[in-house]
Amino acid sequence: MTPAGRLRSAWAIAALAWAFGAPVQAADYAGPLFDTHLHYNEEAWNGNAGPFPPAEALARMQRNGVRAIVGNSRPNEGTRILAALRETREAGVTVVPFIRLYRNRADYTNWFRDESIHEMVLAELARGTAAGPYRGIGEFHLYDSANADGPVARKLMALAEQRQLAVLAHVDDVAVDKLMAHTPSGGRALRLIWAHTGIGGVPVARVRELLDRYPGLVGELSYRPGLTCAGDPLPEAPGANAGSGGERYPARARGGRLCPEWRALIEAYPTRFMIGSDTWVNQRWVDYDGLMQGYRRWLGELPPSLAQQLAWGNAAALFGLAPALFTGAETRR
Image (cartoon, rainbow, N blue to C red; front, side):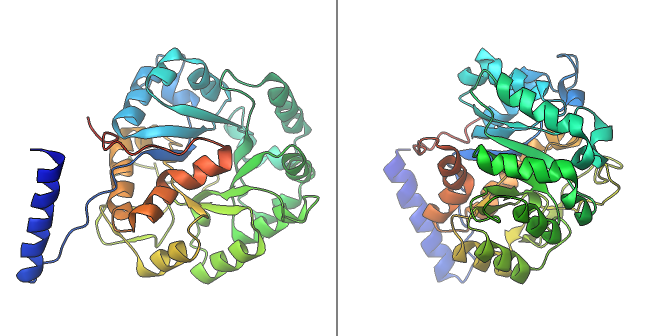
């Protein structure tokens, strides 16, 4: 069937559904995706002997229409590997490299006061990657917002703003204010990607308040409680939703619809949200297809221009990537 024929058929089906009072299911978003929260951690590749060597990880991105990623890995070698591979370019994936603050799991709960982390960041900035210079710092965690006042946290926030580096932070709303306060501009000039937009379920009104206060704050939407309604929960391996600091990650719905208050927030701030996978454990790689399909489903409920902004445009603008061309081929397998 020709494209025109497919379009006529779609309109005919929609007309019949409307005539008989049946709900019309919006078509899934079919354009490119920018995964702004991708970890290629050691346990995934493990010297190419792990369950997700580069070829497998890239195949998952490619078949899901993921055209760019924010790569941040424990240790940073994982990101450098993806950035250097010819296969990454052949898969059509652009790597935007970030410096993760973790050499090992012990760094999760100590980075904010460990001077050797600050030294590592400076060394990585000098080193760069095959994909070009590092573009940001993180993801990092603060399980207690008071630790945002740690000496290394203070140094890195000031450094990020001075070097025009974005920051990917898994923190609560109190820590957002604290981190912003440590920048020369008081948070007015820092580009901070708020991982999960408050994984503890920060109220939408408080998210709105912070978006108004900080022009460079953007929300990444993986694991965000209350984002989608209905649908079946995604499967998780035993213990897979327990974080390194003991916090619990909320279950997410497969095929859920965008909840009304979140749709209203996204429509009010169309340039301030992005999507991500958060492949922090191998189970997330196992379910990568489902995660991306879930995004495509609820993005399809939005006006096409808004869906494209969340899926690609906002992150592409932040990192200076070219606007994507919609070929309709992004989700072909």
